[in-house]
Length: 300
Image (cartoon, rainbow, N blue to C red):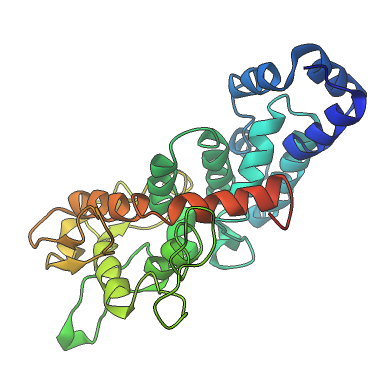
């Protein structure tokens, strides 16, 4: 198929941060599929090494929260000049779905925010199930949606597992609030009403799954605290704060682990829970629509 100049520019304005004459000629010469194959092979341009390099020039006692400005600066340089344009564009789309923000408790986590974005870039073309797990266990997400430090229930001390991440992973990152058909249209019941994907009991079940995880490298849950190093490493499970009872998850035809049995490890519970969400029939249409909106057209 012969690709015209206008078609090449249209394609690049969706697949990159902006077409250039040289890129358009490359698309015309290679064709769409070969250009995409070329992009898939290019390694991710990363933010964290730049943030670390800049911090090495800071004098003792300097305000390290200013590193967020350097993180934004290297993001812009990558958007303008990085060779892995498709990867960067997909990472940006994912960052608008699986959101964190430095305008939050993460103001003191410039390394974590850079590492989180790098994780999205490195997972941009991989397994969505892997991406779900990497997002779930990243300490920047753990801080932002308060899964990090989530404790098992303690009736005497009026402690109940935090439900924030349990809701948002389903509502915003994977399946949404109502059941969908494969084409993304809303499924309805006999009365014509949308069918909810989950209820409060399911939220509580997932909230209990996400207990016992906090910063890595500590001898115990209670002694874990943030460092420059562990805000860029996956969170660690500390069994002493993990809820070990049964947990109700999503129910749907062919559901995997719709009820988690008691007595499993934190890692087993997490695997079961993420598999349960990942295999829900909403994931495909829900995520595909959002990627189309961010990469192709706002009204699919």
